[in-house]
Length: 231
Image (cartoon, rainbow, N blue to C red; front, side, top):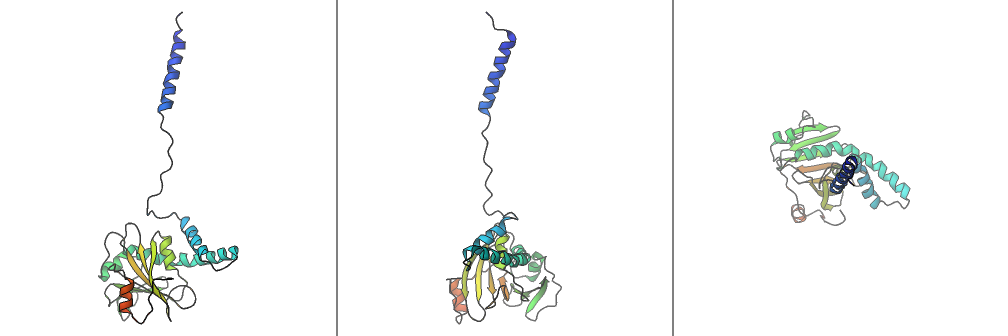
């Protein structure tokens, strides 16, 4: 006995639907973030807090977290400086020693400040004094008025990798760091700190991208106890 036409049509339609389901692509997992991508706005503070808690001296976890939360304000306050330093080295080439190129790349700085005696150009970024020194050529000096600014963690908050190179103690302890970020030329910062308290007295960076190594630091400043340990 022949199958009714409408029944045959329903059977064919069901087979087509099943075949389409078999061929439907399997759901995929979201793609991982690109290597070196800048962290989302909510991520930097969480990363800082994790690093801060690892080195906390308080035995009370709540007290340690409160101290780290208080230090985050130092990081936030230094982020405009961190962005200016990264802007100086954006792209594949260091800016070199030309003060015009340096000031053009660091457009966030007001370069109309009175020029320091040892500088070829001076500017202000908030309360920070910034000078392009006459010697060594291309060296940028940032002086703080005593604000608690954590520029190292601010650079990390802006997506940069910051690695200690060397440090020394003494009346004005200093540390040298290598800074790297995707689509930027690597550079180094030297941060001189007060013996007590937070923040920094002076920060220098060479716009030609020169990165010091421990042996050179020891040769250039033999009176300072430069070391690569516990920095």
